[in-house]
Amino acid sequence: MKNNVLYLIKSKLNINIKGHNIERFIKRLKNNNIEILNIKHISNEEINIKIYKYDYDKLIKLKTIYEIEIVDYYGVIRTKNSFLNNKYIIIFMLISLIFLYLITSLIFEVDVVTNDSKMEKVLLEELGELGIKKYKFKKSYIELQEIKNKLLSNHKEKLEWIEIENVGTKYIIRYEPRIKNKIEEDTPLRNIIAKKDCVIRDMNISSGQIVKGIDSYVKKGDIIVSGYVTLNGSVKDTVSSSGTVYGETWYKVTINYPYIYKEEYETGNSKEVLVIKFFGKDMELFNFNKYNTKKIIENTILKNNILPIKLIKQTQKETILIDENNTEEELIEKAIKLAKKKIEEKLKEKEYVKDYKVLNKTKHSDSITLNIFFNVVEDVTEYQEIEEYTEEKEID
Image 1 (cartoon, rainbow, N blue to C red):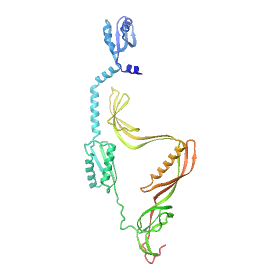
Image 2 (cartoon, rainbow, N blue to C red):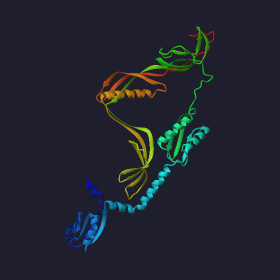
Image 3 (cartoon, one colour):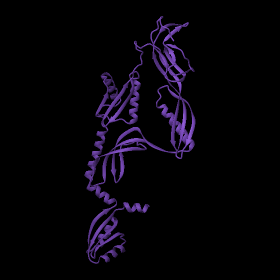
C-alpha cells in the first residue's frame, strides 16, 4: 500500500524521443539504471516513454543525437505546474472566498415584527447591546438561545415567547406578548361544570361555592362550583364562579410499532456553510460545530472550468437518524412511550399522564399492536351561564 502511494505522488515525465536506433537507446537507458515506467512505439524512429523526474538529468546526458521533448507531467510536479499556471485564478478565488465569508457573516438589517413601536424600540436597543445590530457578525445557535433567554428574563411580564430568525444577512425578530388573565367586570354569572366524566383530583377556585370536592366522581355537565352562594340552605348571593378544576379522565389508545424502525427527522436547526469542492472532496469553511447528520441544499457560487474546483453555499439542516432493530420487550416499551408522547403533546401546562395499563397486544410478522388504557389528569373546567337569583325564583 505504501509503495502504491509513493508511486502516485512521485513526479513523473512523459517524454517523446526521435532518432535512429531507438532500441539501442532504450538499452542504454536501462543499463544506466533509468527505470522506464511505460513505453509506446509511435514509429521505428519515434517513441514515448514515461520515467521518474529524478532520472531526467541522466537521460539528457545520454541523448547525444536524439531529439527529446517533455510531453506531459504526472504526480506532484503536475499539480505544482497546474497551480503555477493558474495561481492568479486561485489567489483571486481565495480572496473572493474570504470576502464572501465576511459579507455573508455580517448583519445588514434587524427587523422586529410588531405593531407596538414602543416595544420595538426597547427590543432593538437591547438586541444592539447584546450584539445583534447592523454591521456586527452573526451569532451562533447557542448565542442566539442565550440572547432569547435573557430577553425573556428581562421582560417576564411582557413577553410570552420570542424567536430570532436568520434570513440571509437579516435577522427577523418575532414575539408574542404576554396577556394577563383578568376577570372583566361584565363577566356573566355562571357555574363551573364538568367538561367530561372524571374523578376530581385538584381544584383552584377563586369565586363560587364548591359543590363537588376532591376525589368526587362527576359526569359531564355536573355542577362542580355553583354561582349561587347559599347559607343555611338559602341563597344569599349570585356570583360568577371562577377557577380551574383538574379531573382524572380516561383514554384508550391503539398503536402499532414495528420490530425494525427507521426514521430521519429534522431538528429545526439549520445554518449556511461555504464549501470548497476540490477533486470530489468537500472542505467546509469556518464550520467549527458540524452536524452529525444533515440534509443539504447546494447552490454553486463560483466554479473553475480548468481546475476541478467549486465554491458552494450549502444550507445544512440538522437531522437525527433513528435505526432500530427491536426485541419484543424493547418494542412494547417504545410503543408505550410513543403512545404516551402523543397524548402529552395535546396536554397543557399542569396536565399530565398519571398511569397506564396495556389491555392487550396483537403480534404480527413485522410489528405488534397494543391497546393501552391511559389515566390522564387534565383541565375539565367548563362554564354554564345562570340567572341572577331573586326570591321569586327557585333554584334546582
